Amino acid sequence: MEKFTTLTGVAAPMPVVNIDTDMIIPKNYLKTIKRTGLGKGLFADMRYLDDGSENPDFVLNKPAYRHAKIIVAGDNFGCGSSREHAPWALADFGIRCVISTSFADIFYNNCFKNGILPIIVSPEDLQKLMEDAERGANATMTIDLEKKEIHGPDGGTLKFDLDEFRRHCLLNGLDDIGLTMRKVSEIDSFEKKNAKEHPWA
Image (cartoon, rainbow, N blue to C red; front, side, top):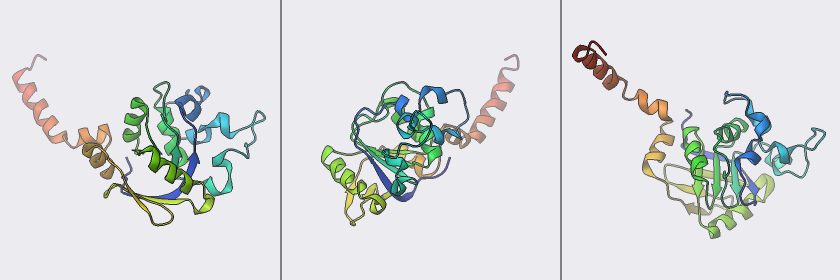
């Protein structure tokens, strides 16, 4: 998994509450188990019109936000069904960080397993960040995970909290498999010992 240390990029404003996983990646994109290629389906029902053309009013179709790396969203982001395709689609599009006042638990946990940083902030801080994100091409923010800081386009800084274990995993690019592989020598030793003590198993 790619390490997350410092991220600088355009932040797209999505001031909508209860953005669920079906809005993030509609069910017709769930036929694959590959993590790549899902970016085209991200927010598909909002990004595309009935004829398949782009909806010019959707934020990620606007020139300033086509390459956004951060989303500033309304309350309860990622609610609904527990599809891991949602963070896969975000990551494939290029989104590495989502900022909101709250997240659905399963989506929140899945983000860390896929190299995405979900940041929880107060309603007051979210309002400030949303205003910053609405600046179009000037809506550049920097997320410093080491210092747990968000730097806005005017140089302002907001602190955020994060569980230290999750922070450690993102900084070092460790998903569940990566954490297991760090114990590979101990696992090998256990298996050899177990094979000697229980040859019938």
